Amino acid sequence: MWSKARELAQMAPPERNRWVDFLRAVSILAVVFGHWLMAGLYVDDAGELQRGDLLSVANWTHWLTWGFQVMPVFFLVGGFSNGMSWDATLRKATPGQTGVYRDWLAARVQRLIAPTFPVLLLWAVLAVIMTQVGLERGQIRDATEAALIPVWFLSVYLVVTACTPLTRKAWERFGWLSFAIYIPLSMLTDWLTFSAGVPYVNFTNFLWVFLAIHQLGFAWRDGRFDSRLLALATFVVGLAILVAITVYGFYPVSMVSAPGGFSNSLPPTLALFALGVTQVGLVLALEPLGRKMLDNLSIWTATVLMNGMIMTVYLWHLTAFVLVMTVMWIGFGGAGLNSVPGTGEWWASRPLWLGVYILALLPMIAIFAKHERSFGPIRGGRTVPKARVVAGVFLICAGLAATAGVTITSEQSWSGINLVVVAAPFVGAALLGFGPMYKWFSKTPAEEGSSS
Image (cartoon, rainbow, N blue to C red; front, side, top):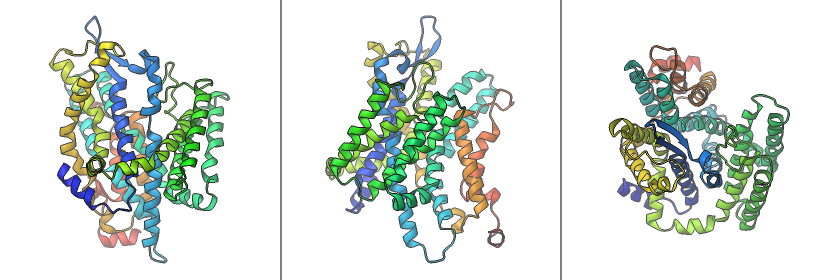
């Protein structure tokens, strides 16, 4: 894999912005190691397995979330990449060509969603097997929820990606105003949530916060942050606001979760918005140094290698964690799980445990990373009909979001799974023209032409 990555690294055109690829890799790795650190199972004095949460037992670790909660950086990179991809698509389109947006979106969805199919299928099958052998359904739910935590985020990213033509046009016409409009929208959403007590309105912040950061990706793409002074000013202003509204204000310091159930990320709040702006300013201020660093072939090769398996690492890292915990608990009687999260003994054992998680993840990378590269043409190269695009994207987003909000398990079903939740992403992909269920929805070319 290293040899192949080195070949690809040497073939990269000199004008490629390698800092984009580096930030994508680092942001996902930060999420992976953050999850591995935060989740802490341990065996209590009575010999029972307990769920520990590092953030709930060590308040000082709340500050660490400012570095590990880097989803805003992923959306910054997404804005840069989506803007570049959409601009290239428009340049290649012929006058009067129809279906340009539909073809572009279907291809982006395929690259994003296809790698999720194996992990969803595996856990659906495992849930059925564990149910049939009589395992307690609550434990099955806990395991599947833990393993599939990464999946919900993809539904948000997909919605933001689908908005690219509109948001890109807004950036070209209104510039910074197309970013600034999301600040009062996010503030109003938080006021309605925390002061007026309006239910569910806080979920709109998934759009306002991440669309805003996505707009900053367009700004970066168009060279608006070429001035290091602007990037540094963005960092300083963002950090000042972040400190003011957390340390001296209403919002908790933790950007993941906090005691009492308050979360700055599920859904996002103004505090996560401020953190995102801070991170954008910092990483773009470091861009010249970073691009110089990536001139080193070994570092650039490592970046290329990571980007070639990035979705696999992200989607499977908690499956590796659950696998390790299950083996240690059932196979070895809880050996090594006697340290309570947050203690000195627990911290001292973290390097060893992180190494074990990495070793457990490696076979999954070897088996499933190919799904990030094996993409065929959407519907054999034919444009997806409008109704199928809308229905397909809706089903994928709803299904992925439901894995977190509803879960794929079921307390009542004989099978132990919620078949609607499991099937939704697969049916949605089939409607768009790819995936393992596509052949069930496909028609002959003549029928497709008439239905289009």
